[in-house]
Image 1 (cartoon, rainbow, N blue to C red):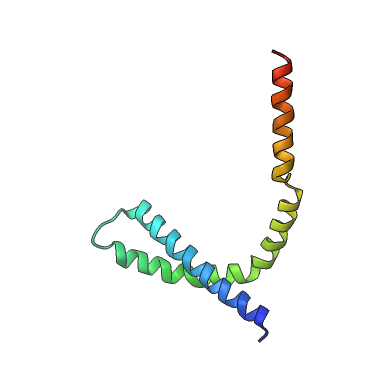
Image 2 (cartoon, rainbow, N blue to C red):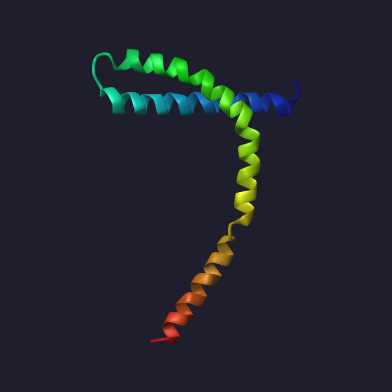
Length: 96
């Protein structure tokens, strides 16, 4: 296994772990509230969700990475946004 493959596997495991842990804790709390059976319900939901989340991150991670690169490349840069803001402010000032 190459370093890149190992890193992708570790990233997928950690990302899916945290996302499924936090999301199931939140959804179980929303649906059932926090009572004496909360931990048992959360454990059941988490153990069902983590393998699915791991497979989803592993399969769709590269496509989401490429999509995020395309979207971020199409977004204006902060310097561009700042220049637009200065022009708009100057235009407002001239119309007063």
